[in-house]
Image (cartoon, rainbow, N blue to C red; front, side, top):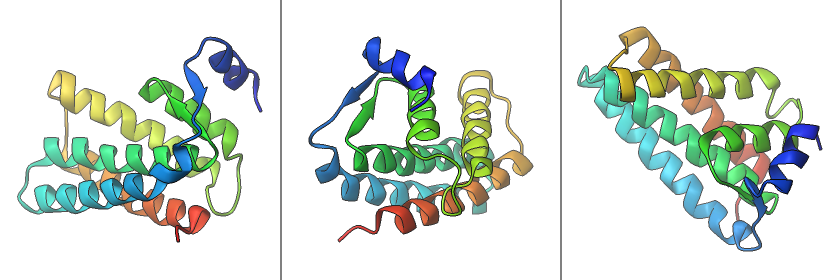
Amino acid sequence: MNIEFQKAIEKKRILPFAQGKQQVKKELKEAERDLAEALNRFQSRKYKYATITGYYSMFHSARALIYSKGYREKSHYYLLVALSSLFPDTSLLPKELISQFHDAMILREDADYHGNFTKEGADEVLNTAQDFLAAAKSIIKPK
């Protein structure tokens, strides 16, 4: 585990979560719902909300992943820290996909808090959300 993860544990920004494994299926279901909603919003040319909802699909996929390892986060940033530490670069979850999750986090913040969004940004978030959900399902393989 990396140093930033260890510091987050010490600061109680990432916590052990014994019930995490029971929550994985619920998080994946939320990721699927958000992705379907984001795709619908994109088709309706609601790019701001497609961006936001697409990011939340990834958020729930990422939560499912860290829950599967018995941890939970206290913020979006620490979700990224946990994800990077608990899932080092692999063929199922490459660093590039984690980096794209971070990019989507920034696009979501820009859309949500500053009203800055584009069709291209929404499309990028949706493509990443689809890949991220597929990767999470491949890694976790819920029963």
